[in-house]
Length: 155
Image (cartoon, one colour):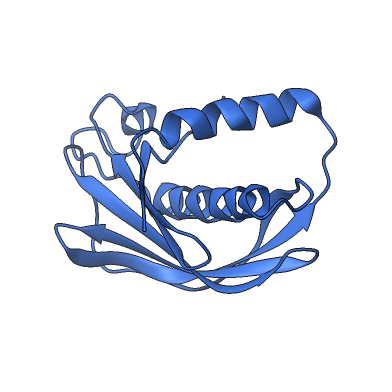
């Protein structure tokens, strides 16, 4: 099963930050078990959504700057804190800010998830970059980016 935990990318400021949205719905499969009668969106999936946004940002930046295409792989999560739960019906705003970007080695982002304008979760993520020469994977990633980047605001 493939989880896409960012519904849309809404803003990109190249080399600085990216913003995305996750709309939580009762139809999300996770609520079958987490928790019946009291659905809470798992913090691990919020973390994964922030990682997907950050990793995608590094890959988008590589393409924008005409670097060799590499895949971002999450390697370290630092100081991740969750301040309150999220429920079905909530709209999370994810933001990833570049702290370090060394295209041949690694990247670091400061990540924040907002709910109703308040910080829901915050931390730091480290990524390593790997060559994965697979045309099918590249096509799949590009298709996903084309969908998520539709109507994005560039600043």
